[in-house]
Image (cartoon, rainbow, N blue to C red):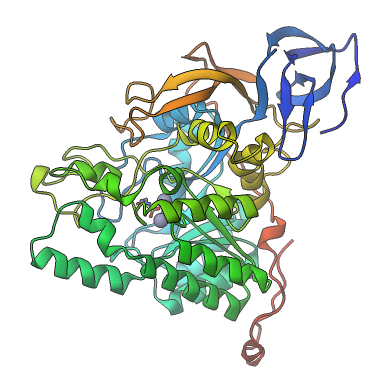
Length: 495
Ligand code: URP
Ligand code: ZN
Ligand code: ZN
């Protein structure tokens, strides 16, 4: 963002006038001139065909949510409540203008077909821009040799693997295979890091003794299961020199393990989510099956873990703050396939959060004085763009960037309720929370898509975002010495 200079006579398509503009690095009083969907000028007294008065408002880059599940089947085949229309509409109302959902391969699926199907659906329905990650559940020869390189070539430069869930998890050998492709072709490996053995052994014992209520979900997903898996995935990444990003980190121990790896120079990035800042395991402990609404993996923990997550976001150990929006209704179509007899093992994992991710952090982070407005922008937008290869097209307000902008009323009071949010889940884990600050006007590529509490966006206007190889994807060039014994290992990273 450059220092504003007086500019008169320049007529833009749209001017946002008189607001306080903040990016991840700067805050200043400036008008924002928008032409052709891009930020064309930052200055004083800009003129435009349309002018939005932003006096007293904060003008921020639209949020980027780099971890959302939309129109996806859970590992048990349970469908998400949101499609690409409802999911992106909900995102837009919460000030998010770019999402990065998963194209999820299940064991029996061909990856190229999975990608084609998600692409067609998003193209027809999304109201904001989107990039894709892949989920790899079957790293067979076709996946590794053909489909993954092809997807990376199309600008899908990140894929997630699971260390747990019977129907999704990969063995260490399979993980090394996927890491090798990611490293060679320039993609970021995202990891769901939990020790499968600990969780499934404990869960089996719990169910046998009749402990089936939702709260046993949190008990079985021990803190140690996250810490062990994080330590193991970092060890595997160091064997083959593959940058990784550990998603939805929730524990003191996991964060400390990541901090230590980063201190010795390993390229390990990490993410946390609203549920680990604003919920605890006590939320799951409710009568009957009500706690299912709060069951996600890993589960919310305790106050000490919440503090560790805040600290990790402050000191950069945790790179990004995403929603992990995983919307399942509290009925037989979603969380409760067997009604009130559903055991914690049968409940779809995940909580909704695509719309409230930013407002929650605005209130309890920025307004509470825990983070600055620039840190707010970094955590909700800029770092996502930088990590996943979208910067500076997205993630900032600078001349040449897409005009993806959320105008925040920093004093607007909002009480969270299920009727406030626009996703299809039918509940929110944050019911009753009092928020201060709300994104009252939202722009995507210069189009005003939310204004006065109303949507003004056409279904299908969102565009796919192919991504370039970003710095986080570049290997360190220091795999363990034993790797030198493998022929054809150091194949250079494709440009
Ligand atoms: O519980 C969660 N997080 N469900 C969504 C799928 C995943 O593991 O990210
Ligand atoms: Zn996960
Ligand atoms: Zn997820």
